[in-house]
Amino acid sequence: MTITTFKPDTAAQLADSVQWALSNGEPLEVLGTGTKRRLGRPVQAAYALDLSALSGVVAYEPEELVLTVKAGTPLAEVLPMLAERRQHFAFEPQDLGPLYGLPAGGGTVGGMLAAGLTGPRRIQAGSARDHFLGVEGVSGRGEVYKGGGKVVKNVTGYDVPKLMAGSMGTLTAMTEVTLKVLPAPEDVRTLVLLGRDDSEAVRALTLALQSPHEVSGAAHLPAAVAARSGVVARLGGAATCIRLEGFGPSVAARVAALTDELGADAVLERDESLALWREIRDVAFFAQPAERLVWKLSVPPTEGPRVAAAIRETTEADLYFDWGGGLLWVAAVPGAADIRACLDGTGGHATLIRAPDDVRASVPVYHPQPEPLATLAARVKESFDPKRLLNPGRIYAGV
Image 1 (cartoon, rainbow, N blue to C red):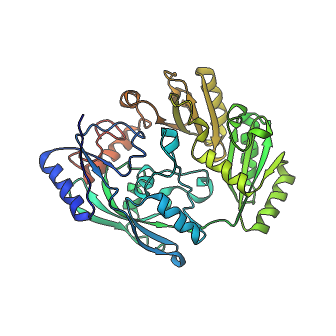
Image 2 (image 1 turned 135 degrees about the vertical axis):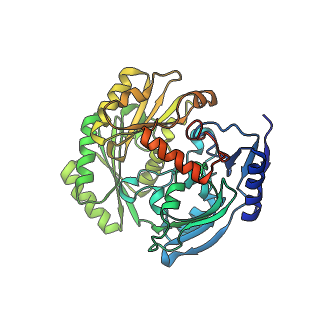
Image 3 (image 1 turned 90 degrees about the horizontal axis):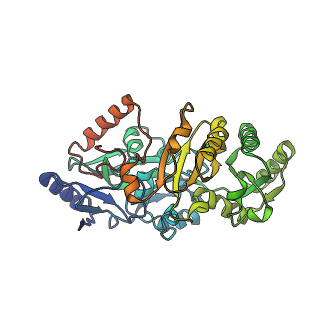
């Protein structure tokens, strides 16, 4: 299919493009730099809406912990700017580019929010949705609008930014976004417990998270996955990893206390810790082989080991745990049995993160919704995009 691309560089031009599509009944694929094109279901559209020209920092107020940028602003521009002021996005956004065979660091701020990408620090800092303060954009009705605010204390209109987080461009073509930023930790250390099986590891992670030591990362890498790490492979065997961040003396004291409580076979210093948690965040262990299907499973942490055992019994797969055992990343062979069947009775849900286009078109990428929730989602879509113009079917077929 030949695709015609609109590339507006102002909100007015973007509105004109959407209004043209509305008049002609032509759906639009909404994208920035395209690094997340393989996330979600394939969009069938003859026209694309490229938002990458809507780029630039609008306002950065480090003292107020607020950043406003155009939605197409590259993360590669924003993250170093925040680092210079010793600030960051506390929700630790993922960079899944290498998982899709693309260079690292290629995404945009708008794409990050639209995909709702959140890393290991979610257990402490919350998700991207929790840091999204304000949005401006053009709805599928061709209307320019604003939602939310530009100060952290302003709670008016928070619902609209929260709707946009994780909406995958199906509700609004965003032009400008405002986010809360936070001070970056001065230091980081990682306790590593070796040789634990899944159940032992999740028990240790649970104890760490229930302790007063402000754990910011809690992951378990079974031996086959740990062997692929550029950091913990040298230690040998399965690696249960607990991250502590903050001021240097505080980190040192908490490391000592948690080591007394749990034991530790190794403690990784700052540079190795940073490298390890990048691997965990970006699912680097599963970048190769590229033909494997990659799933993201959210489960109650206590159910994680049981679900992992069911997956291993059902199909050939590698997996590891994040979020204290509540998140499983699974790399399964092509044609694997239905991973979702392993979630029965847990209340969990599964998202297909990487698969060929034909698989993503035929297998539900996002977990099927209960009828009341599906009805609500359809009503939200109807409100913002009644003609189904923006990324139609990207999340669920027909929506």
